[in-house]
Image 1 (cartoon, rainbow, N blue to C red):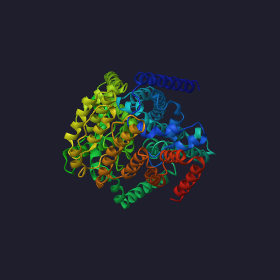
Image 2: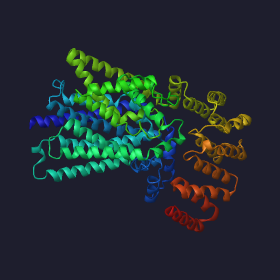
Image 3: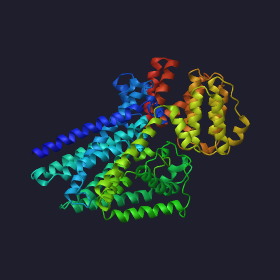
Length: 610
C-alpha cells in the first residue's frame, strides 16, 4: 500500500513539474500575433454579442472542415473579447492545452512502459518506467517540431483533438492494463461498456475539435493488439471486426476513387503524385524528429519537389527504408509500437486528403510514436555499449533538442523574426517571398515589397498572384504602377492558385474601411472579371468567393440590387454565418428592421429547403 501511495505521489509531482516546465518553456516566446488561417477562422468572433444565440451562431457556422469543428470554435469564442487586439491571450491558452497534453502523454507512456516491463520485453529490465516516461514526455513537449502546433493560434484545433483523444485513450488504457482482480468479476462487461462509452464520448469531442481525432480509434486498436496482447475469449472477435472494418474501408475507397481524385482539381498535383510524394515526406518527418535541426522549420514548403513517377530514386529509397523498418520492428514490441503509432497518426493528413504537401505540425500526434522509437534506440545502445554511455548520449540529444527548440521558438516572437528566418532558410518559396513582401508593406517599405512581388511574377510564368499583391500595394497611399498589359497577357493562361481571392478580398476590405481611396472600384472589378473568365481559376470554392467580392464591390458602388443578387446566391448555397450576417445587416440598413425580419425568414427558409 505504501509503495502504491509513493507511486501516485511521484506521478502527481512529475505531472505538476511537466505542467509548470512546459508553460515556462513556451511563455517567453509568445508575441507573434495572428497569422495566415487565424483570420479566416476567427473573424466571425466579432459577431459574438454576449447572447447565447450569438455564441451558437458563431460556434456552428465554421466551414474549416467537414464537421465545422464546433468544440475548437467554442474555445475560441470564450476568448472573443481578446479578438483581434490581444493575440497573446490565445497563444497562452494554446500553451496551457499543450502542457496538459504533455501530462497525458506522460501518463500514457508510463502505463505502456510499465506493462511492457511486466512482459519482460527485451532491454526494458533496467528502465524505470515512470522516469523514462517523464523524460520522453518532456522531449516530446519541447521538440522544435511542436512550436508551430502551439504558437500558431488556429492549431488549437489540433491541440484539442489530441487532448480529448489522449484523455479517452488513457481512461481505457487504465482499464486494459489493470488485472482481472482489480476490475472485479461480476461487473466486467458492464464496466467495459461504460468505459467504452466514455472513450466514444471523448472520441466525438476529439473529432469535433478536428477531424483527425478519428485516428484515436485506430490508436486504441494499436494499444490493444501490440501492447495489451490479450488472451480473452472475445479477442478473436475484436480481431476479425477490425479486419472487416479495414477491408470495408478499402472497398469503399476503391468504389469512390474517382470522387477522391476530383478533390485535387484545386491542387497543382494529382492524387497519385501526392501519395507517392508522401512516402518520402513522412520519412523526412521521421528524420526531422530524430535529428532535430532548426533549419528545417520554416513553415512553408510550397517549393517541395513532387515525386512524378514510380522510378523516382527518392520514392524507391524511401520504400526500401520503410520495408527495413518493418522487418526490424517485428523483433521488438517497443519499436513496433512507435512505428505503427507514427504511421497511423499520418493516415489522414499525409494520404489522400488534398492538403499541402508538407507541414511540420502534422507530427504533433505522430511524434508520440517517435519518442518510443527514441527509447528503443537508447535501449539498443545501452545493451551494446553500456548504460552510462546510453544515458550520456540521451542527455546530449535532449540538450541539442532544447537548443534547436529555442532557436525555432525565438522566431515566433515577432513577425519580423519569422520573415528573416523563414525566408533565409527557404529563399525559393513563393509563399515565403509573399509573406516577406507583405510584412515590408505593412511597415511602409513599399518599394522593397514591390521588388519582391515582381520577383514572384518573374519566377512563375503561369502565376498572377504577384500582380494582385502589387495592386494591393496601391492601397498604401504611394503611387504603384499596375502592369495592365502584362496582367492581361498572363491571366488568360494562368493556372489555379490558392490565395487569389484572398488577395482581392484584402483589397476590397481596405476600400471598405477607407484605406484604399487611390484605387478605383472599376479597376478592381475589371481584374475580378478577367480572373473569372479563366475557367482554370474557378476551382473549388473560388467561384463563390468571386461572387462575394463582386457583391462587396457593388455595395461600394451603391448598386444594392447587384450586391443582393450575388450575396443572396452564396448565402442560400452555403448557409455561412458570416455571409448571412453581412447580408442581413446590409438589408436592414437599406430597408429597416421590419422588412429585414421578413427577408431574413425568407432566406432561412430557402436555406433549409436547399
